[in-house]
Length: 165
Image (cartoon, rainbow, N blue to C red; front, side, top):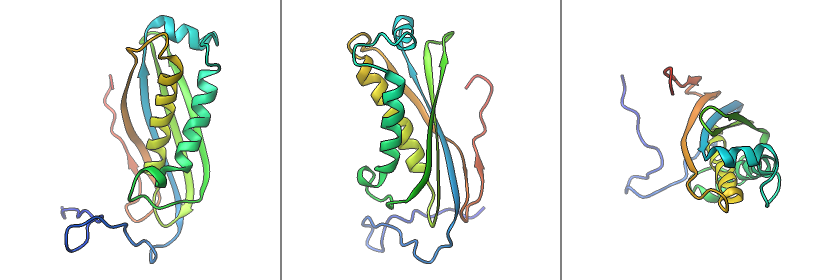
């Protein structure tokens, strides 16, 4: 198997933004996930809309969408992209006192949207933390990862998730 090269460095070893000008436009999709763990009381307050700052998941959803759109402004080597769609979904797991955040980001372009999907999940998780920290400073944002991506020269990627992950 050929060793992959890091492309964000020039001949002098300094950072550079990769030139994607000669690449073909293709449909690009990336799905990312992450988890926010919390106390059972905090989860109940979110579900019952009793957090003083308002609708936690509604605000987190908007935050994730906004973050996906601004990824190139906070991740230095990311290209600004015209996104064609951003979805943020939440799954409440009462047995484990957690909220699973999933983002799906789409574009037609020369470079992928993995970073936009990951950034969306991170921002949504941080927003949940921010809105609930008055009642639960012990929340944990964890396991943010790329679940799937398609499009481009590297093709399709699907994370191999073992049972229990």
